[in-house]
Length: 557
Image (tube, rainbow, N blue to C red; front, side, top):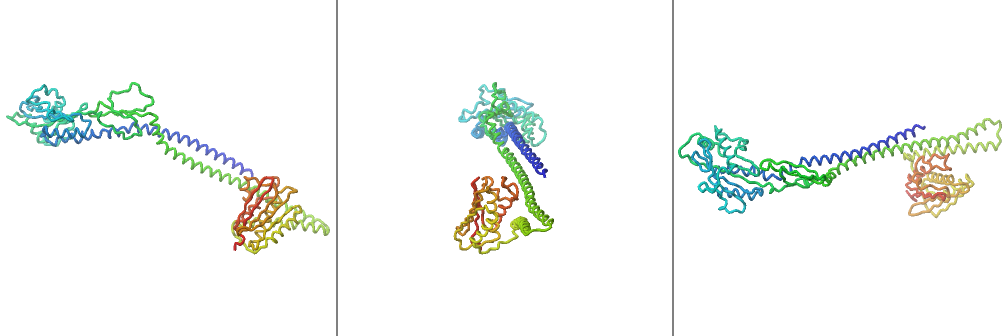
């Protein structure tokens, strides 16, 4: 019988250990989750800068990939008027384009002033225009071939480089084929610091014509126009678009050589080198660590909530296991006490019956007094056993609802007085006062009602100190219900015990309840009252007494 409490202690220790384990796991998971969120944010801080660069420099990519190649559509017939219109469109559309230089160049096998010769082919500048915003057309022309103003071909490095590459391409041309994209980029684009120079891409047939001019010197060969435009750029006029304001607090364009002498320890920084015309620059990203911490907390919050929810679920499961274990332990204790008390309840009358039987058996002759005395003992002890068995049987029938209420018209005054008289005969020191208001009609099951009276009156006597065995029974009619009040002057019941006294096998530990009770009386009363569609309530004060109130319908039929 001692193994169950021992197992209970072991299981309780296991539950406590499990609770400690999941609590430690919670702390570890929160710590790990926070570190993962921090590392993830720092990783994004280093990687998502590419998105900022792509979004911010999208206008530059559009200019390079779509706007500049449109010059080839003119096929060398771009004059000052159309060049001015094209340049104004670009200057108004892209704020980072400071100015556009238009080289109105020509190609021939004849001698060209301000040009250079590659084989028999000459390439030179006929006119030079420079377009800026809000500048009139007359001031845009800065050089004419027939008007020397000090400008010479050797001052046009961008033009020279692209023209020389163009001549190399003509030299290698041997068939009418479309040019590959890498050949176009290497030949017709010249990308330098803050500048893009582009020569209009001629048709394959024109390249063959130019090659023929390069190889064979012809008489009076015509002059061919070839357009070259140079775009001067200012990267600081490109607006930086912060696509991730939650990560980057400060973004700026810096020279690639920029390196702050005094790095602030509270700043998290990174940079991204530019390419192409902006290869001398880098995007510089910086955020205060407190700023980054806010984003880390924002990312960590849902993780923490998820971890805590899982922890609460596990804690709730642990609580259910503990409650189950505790309930089982209480049930075991109740069953243990029940078996002990029930055994005692049976053992006492059985022992008395056995002693009386042995006395009768061993006696040679019994007097009339002895016969009556032993007969009374056997009768009383048999009644005790019968009442105990009937109570258990009735309890089981109530729980399984295998019995039915047999309603009869009851005269409460006669019914209650008969029970009072029988108790006063049984207990000479029991003072019972009966108060009944006039109740015309009452229908109930007399057997069930008698059991309720018997249990409550027996408890009132049992739990009262000697010399204070007093009970008042008051019966009144209120709102189609009959109220039965059983008021004693017993030892009383503690407030925290009031919710337990109607539980099966539950016994309050006191000097009046050491033996002779199995904890079924009040539980049986409640089951009966509820079965009869009524209710039972109790109020009590320690050393002052208790009041049990039974409420039953007056006419349930």
